[in-house]
Length: 172
Image 1 (tube, rainbow, N blue to C red):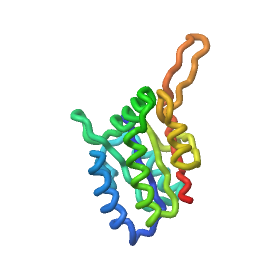
Image 2 (image 1 turned 135 degrees about the vertical axis):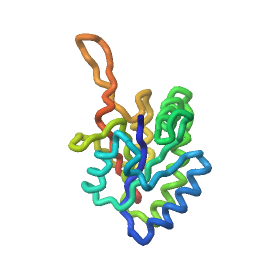
Image 3 (image 1 turned 90 degrees about the vertical axis):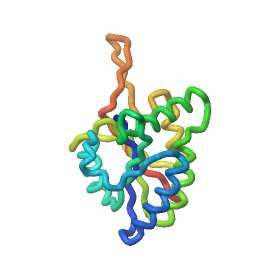
Image 4 (image 1 turned 45 degrees about the vertical axis):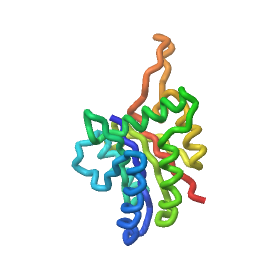
């Protein structure tokens, strides 16, 4: 299952205020935000723990759009990004981020958006830095965040879901 979320550097005294603001906003998009994410049984937990340590993050927010099958998945967010590419539309997730970032800027000094399928300890990641426009240019492809690798002998592309993407959003 896909996991989408963000990690923030912010003052611990501001965390509960920011969580309340983001939770209110997420309802407009039918997203569920999880701040207490440890123990959910996610295949990305080990990698998220490493990201917290590597970037000294105070707040992790998982962004899920639950399906009927499972509550802890971002698959529908990734599907929306993929569908927006094929339909040449603005993805719903972009609207969420564009409304969330002004709130985040009030409380956080750094924002790291992450996309992962499976993420174990020690996994190498793709790391990019840029604006929201840069992020959505990167995601604007049929594979969204994941890489596809080409096997020349078989003349086939295979998804590489084992390489998570961390995108640091420039807040200036």
